Length: 221
Image (cartoon, rainbow, N blue to C red; front, top):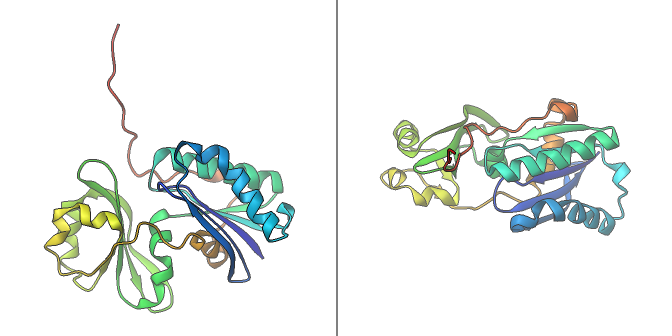
């Protein structure tokens, strides 16, 4: 089984290709406004280097948020269009779980954190049994203070994400912090194989934005 994984939900574009549980190739790039135009070329180049024809792909795993609105839309639009053209299914993957999925064997609670707006965050809490992650707090949008108060009940939980350091609310906690910017670039592809039974038709994928979009100043005539 060959899986293409795409995550455009952060300022980094993470792409990977996995087969039979092994990661064949991965890349992480900061593309800025060139993300949508470069994405197809990067995928094409990666497949070419591996001597894999695009028609050999069996599944596409796409991170559908939360994160940057434009990145979410870019990633799932390209992934859904490609999956539909190939006649294959697509797997929506949480960007919060992508950040921590490679830590699932640690056997401790894991709390990924991504900065949202103002003093708010996207966060979740996963329990790890040493083999897999089980969501205890599903991905949500809340204030840093609200999540920090909740984590007082789970001092053994490890906070994951570079953005944790941006919030004073977390500095008073005893929890360990892993300040990574993103997870492994190819993790989305590996999760595609891991959760393949949850794949859906490409026309059913939606962005997991978790909040309303920011609206700029409005002028009235």
